[in-house]
Length: 443
Image (cartoon, rainbow, N blue to C red; front, side, top):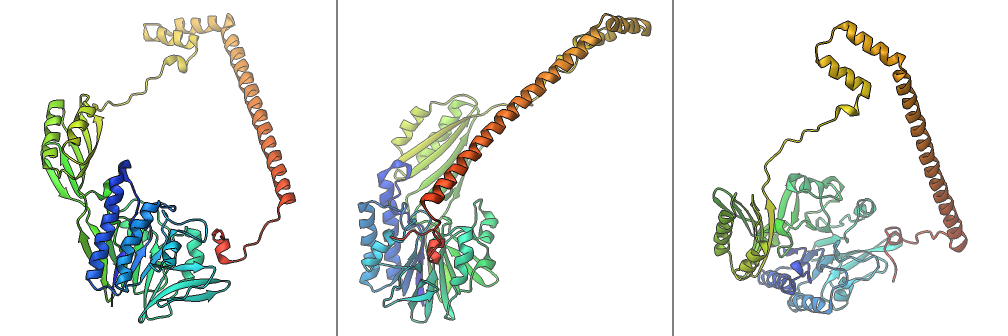
């Protein structure tokens, strides 16, 4: 038994607002399809985000149809789930259009049963779980869900066969915790039993085995952002070049995954630093000279003096297909010291007294000064001023509280009116099915 595990195709993604980048993503999917057919795969799973948007353009749909037809010609069934990018809040999505053309089968909970050569529907209460079947292998899955939705859905995805594949577009905590900084929706312990977990959503190729469970992410088919760069360039004291992320798909043989790499357009993640502008530009031109002319370069330049980014961008545009240049000035680290004025803490009399104490005064002189201050009413005046400030602050505070209370009262009254209005015009509708409860609108 052999199958191809593909995810995060992102058909139609015009990265950097460049239409030719959408062509790159379409080309990568086509290359993967060709390799999957050549490998004699028994079936294909697409673990979400076949499209970059839930409403793909006619051109994008046409390109997807042309590639999926390659599987149809070879009688290779395709099973897919919707991802967070291309799912909709309704029953029908672009996936169902492709399903109606016989190009793929949409896995998951449905309002109506679907049956075919490689598809079965299992009734669960008042909905149907649509699953794939190829020989003795069961393929289950569902669209991208939130955490609370998964609590309801995952227990329903239990296989009836000893051989099964679970297809989901989610982030697993144990995988995320290893070396990624992103949110997750489930843990390994939440997963129902399966021989192979075909995941999508994480764009970096990852294959992990936890307690005998193989959890695999093939990653996106093309370079979706700078974290997926093919080459990493760092140039400070010396030039350092590193290989970045591979792109491709996973070929699974008897539930053992093998990553199959494909060639994609080069994406360079570049950081260059030099104290002088002349040194910085020299290093930048050296890096440009090493880059593929059809590649994409995103460069961060650091220097003590300002750099003419526009001029360097024009130079880069002649050397590579697309370039983005960002500049960051190197600043000397200055320790922040908070300076407070003595007047923030002492009265005028206290400041005067402190000033006198800095000089040579005996105790009798200090005592005489203090007595004179109190007899002249200075202390009383300070106490009166202090009391006035307290009264003013309390008055102001009460005014603010009253204003805030009025606002809260007005808001509460408005909400009550809206609630009464809603009750009088529309009765609360009880969810008819599990799909209604999960927020899927019926067409």
